[in-house]
Image 1 (cartoon, rainbow, N blue to C red):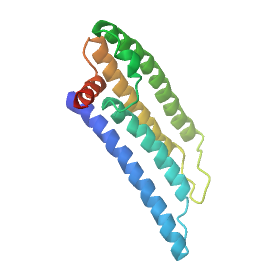
Image 2 (spheres, one colour):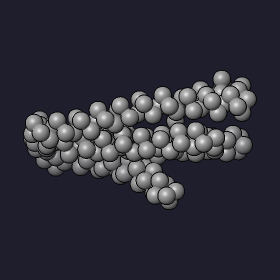
Image 3 (tube, rainbow, N blue to C red):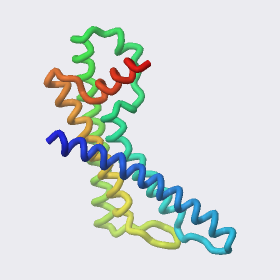
Image 4 (cartoon, rainbow, N blue to C red):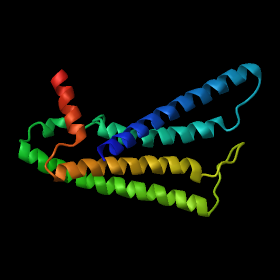
Length: 171
């Protein structure tokens, strides 16, 4: 099971990186196209879709790797017992919030599919397609938060804390 979770987080990170590369290539094609007198149809739309997907795909990977910004000024002053309680409480709130976000994203995909919504621009794209990428990233984040929450409830350290501790030892 651990390899599945790690694979999910790694895949999410790779997809985020792929979306950034896609944005770069789209913008580069648009710049080169201007020199040769042609346009890349709906490049702005596709770049915007890729930006949203990259943001949401990157959340789960970054959370698992301890890359999200945390206010450690207070956290470092707590003893181990208090820190475990604090982490469990915060992760419970985070699980509720990310679960709501994922539900809302999935419902948005459903509505866009049911109502046949399309993007405005040269190339009309069914909106459920790029929204599905955002919803997938949101679901991956919920899984990452749920994994950390389970670790905290069991009295173990979540992955992001281990990564934070490794980084603090290196400095």
